[in-house]
Image 1: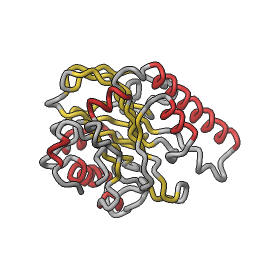
Image 2: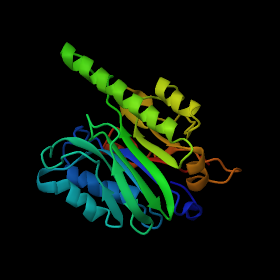
Image 3: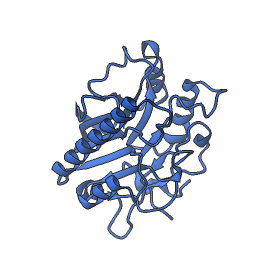
Length: 267
């Protein structure tokens, strides 16, 4: 996909929505999808330092979590705080992977206790640098046709609450090293995406789509955002601004209606 990736050593970050229950390919298992993800995302010679996955499924007796640990053996698998994946083995959740050779101590915390599976939030020492990592899967409210009124109202309430909590955290910690990634359910001109930028965060500024489905057509709804100090650490030099670009031609498009998103330069 890119040439001379060595210059981005210990800076590469990726986010991808696995679409755990979306039947893009009915002839493969979720385990096969995880294996393909490990082959595509964790480059053999240039492994990302942070991988944020959304719509992960735990499976009965941690079946898929164990597979994730097997396929990403060089990573620490960090599950969201407060989510009982044993009891909810078929529920989707966000999971964050950090390279073991760079990870020091870390601490999980909850941003939204009402839907703890949706946001995996932690503060970690990465190569000695304290960094907040927020891996979010925002509640979707675009596809509510034929749903009961109470269900629609509850989804909208959870959606609004989730964004309020995200904005509060991002604003309060904007002077710290903060990385936000995930499926944010809005294009680059969305109201909430614009608010993140107004708070001083540096986000992707391009028009390539990260998703193909009937709700969003072809839009960039998966994002990576960096506080100013985090961008200085995990980005490029002032002369070479880093952009988030999707691996649009990746084979993973056959496994999900989302494409993986990397913080690589557009060139």
